[in-house]
Image (cartoon, rainbow over all chains, first blue to last red; front, top):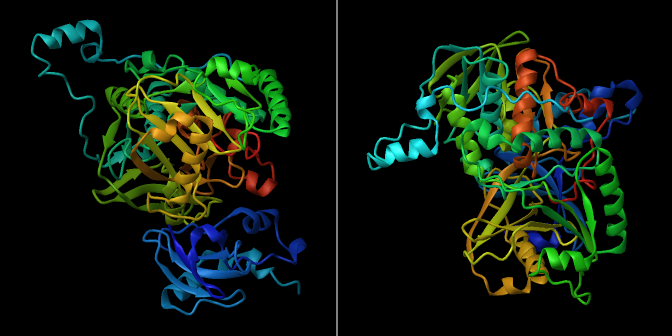
Length: 114
Length: 432
């Protein structure tokens, strides 16, 4: 069983949390400027790495707050925990963030309604 | 909707001397069973193939078998990182059924079930297919109504399905607790009598042996390290045993599908999650059917060895570790004990996890990709075993003809662009 360090409540058992999947996916607000394929990418395509993964968790049975976790999907090591709206600061987290295909996707570029 | 005529391929083994039969048994008894031939050759890779199947699980081996036996494409190889059937094929709870709600699902799962019926003869291998029935239980008034709707839809697709009341369930499964005072009482259920189980290892071995007989190279301990392409065309694969030239690559690698896709620069809508299962110590025969419950979330059957085989849903986070978290088995055991009180006195014998590739609509992907010659068969999530023959049959057709047939067409990757999802979350029940 995982023990997750909630940044607000401290370490708790996995049972208290719900997992929200891949972190840092922005809704393309300028949705009429992108193709159906690009919107489908935002809706359905997910990073699913064997190794370092950036994901969102929610302390559902505790403070009910969301936060981000850098976790290794092979060793289950939790490498970093950081607040929503922030970017990872550990080197593993930074690499995973910068190297994700999503950073250069059209859906991500349309995240802000310009 | 379901094709009545299925091309089952050549059937049996070409090499008559290798066929398993009562005569073969008697002949080999004379030499104290010391001279049985190998079930399949230990092949090493050739420089090039007409097609390469990555993944030597049930689906991959079935694909290779049907490519050879139905489509006559015999210059092919199955590449397996570990040993054949050592992944999810050998880790699942072996349940087979085709009682799905949507037409697209009914079509592919019934296609598979028709192939299961007679597969042992096709492969000349006893896969221990047992149509012992699959009973899905309802625990609330609402679930019962939803179930009736599903039963009618399933029957309209020509698939057997019957509603049962608690008294009928008790008669069918004497060891079940139908006391209405428990937290999730048995309110009714529906059964598919043609559903059941098969020996999972035997399915892999049977397909491997029959494919090998047709000249398919089965290459174990061979890990794919890269997919090589020229422009938008596949030209071969890099492995730890060197480069293999081929124009067609079929990826059937379940939990590692995303990893394989990234090698080709493709992103899939998959999440790889641990799916756990466990068996109890073996006991005398007590359960001669398969019981599934979506509300309390557990499925159970008894193996021929006597072990109670239990499974439930996936863990809640992505993982490639082939192990899961404790709360999942704890939950499935709690559900089992409530429905079958005698189980509280059983000891657990083994417990394991496998990595399944879950799809957003709980339906598989059988698809061409943007890259010519690269095909994916993945996303079966928690319910792939039951589809093994159908999946292989349809995927072989897709690879051989480079276009999906009627069964495969709805399962293309393009559904995540068009929105024509095949949402089986509610229809299949959470448990597969």
